[in-house]
Length: 130
Image (cartoon, rainbow, N blue to C red; front, side):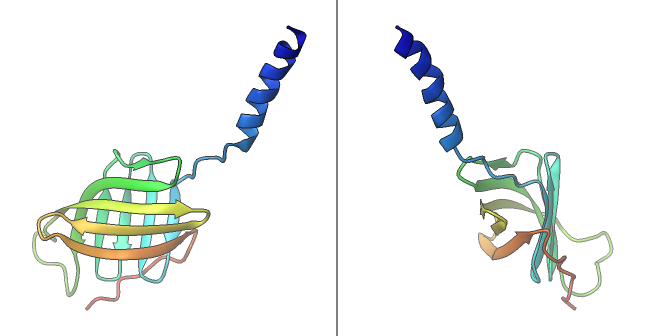
């Protein structure tokens, strides 16, 4: 009985210490090709030739797998009158340490943008599309 009282907390402590912390997607991620600012209320993606938004329903698994939905907006040239047409999109990716690899699928055309390899606090990508 004494051993059981001692072993139960010890076993719990061992499992707690052995479990890695889940990754955190919140914050600013960047590279020369893409820049992402992500919060629990959603995100904004800046690409060299476009942009996107991520809805607040995004999810991140304990293993670092990212999924979300949102819109993308094509780029190139001056903004048209009335703005760019939003295109429903699916966002998927993976976070490992300070690296976030993100891909975007434009649902209507099934076109894939990326993958974009960004790092936490990395440089902001400026639009270069003319």
